[in-house]
Image (cartoon, rainbow, N blue to C red; front, side, top):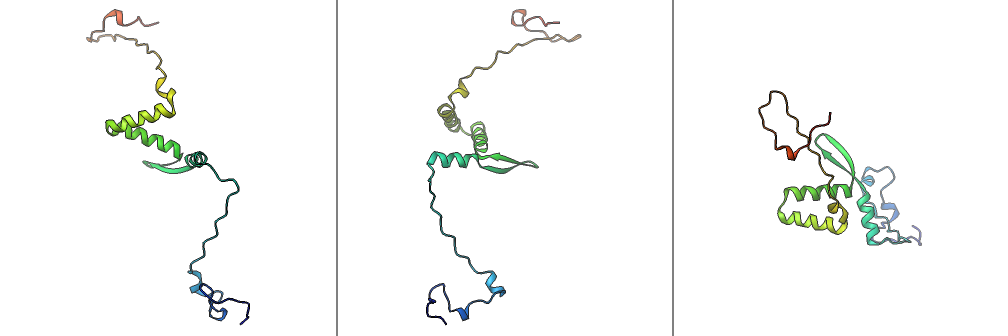
Length: 136
């Protein structure tokens, strides 16, 4: 044995090591690679942005879809809002008002309701001041 080889914890003598091709050597535990220090550490918003942009596979019925984490999060929030308690609803509305104030502020387009009276129908139409004549 060479004098420059240290024997100790994790370093058995060379003559007692597993020989190449030995089946027992295949299942041994590998050492973890050393962490590489980043030259430019990311800020919390950058880390969060990167995490929200990653894609995940979700299953809807028989379909498997690739969706961004942000999309999945919003869908789950809306699902919680519609099927949860009033407290959940208030929480989601507060989030929307805080991070997307224009989403709830926009007014819907005005609707134009046109009533048609089918021939032979016995259902009465609403008063004439509520509806316009259909355009031919």
